[in-house]
Image 1 (cartoon, rainbow, N blue to C red):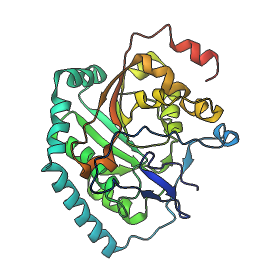
Image 2: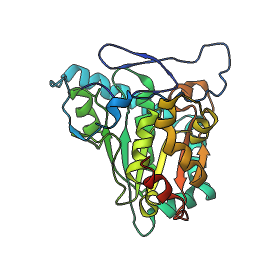
Image 3: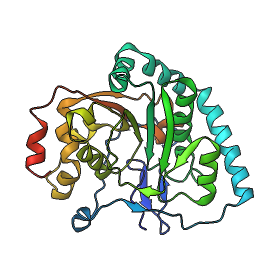
Image 4: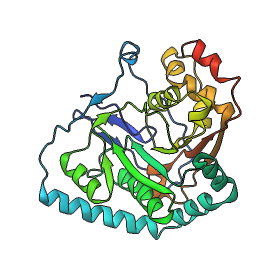
Length: 287
């Protein structure tokens, strides 16, 4: 199966085995904010996207790799937890404006389930380990964070076993980010393709479903600022741009270059429920 989840603005190219290459900030100079460049699929393939059963090409759990990866995750979590970045991250989550948004998403429920798409190879790269660490630390910090489900087609059997040991559930289905939010859900999708955010919005383009979603991912504002006349880009970002008027967005502060590659241009997104008159327009036009 061809990998359909890639790191985006910090990716230079994908390798022949479907993994991605992280482009880290150059040392000695401060990196400015970079706008996410929408990655799009071939148009003829887009209509064929369906949920598909998934199994890793790497079926063997390697005990030595497993042990090394557990150590890497422990190091990553300790580094994140003791960082100024994490302190700032928690301060934002606990601020009145953001915590109120989470309360609205939860409604009468007590737990927010977490679905992580496109995490990448946690064995090969530090950025995915940082991203996973943040989700696990959030679950540790807040009793309203529920079960964490994870999917990426690049995950090996060894990586899946480590994820399970960390309390995560590895999905056996490639949902193409089309999960319907039938209950309050945090979709954790840092640096995914624009198509996947589009898929998520399309699957939930109803007032009751959008109001149950908290989304961590590429800044929608950045996408709007980078609108082009390219038909494929327009198609891939159509719902993202349409959702901007109903979205409350809170940008993540990376604080230091250590966390720039993993979290730059990322934001929390919440969707206003008072939008009944706007949603049918997109649905009727087949977008």
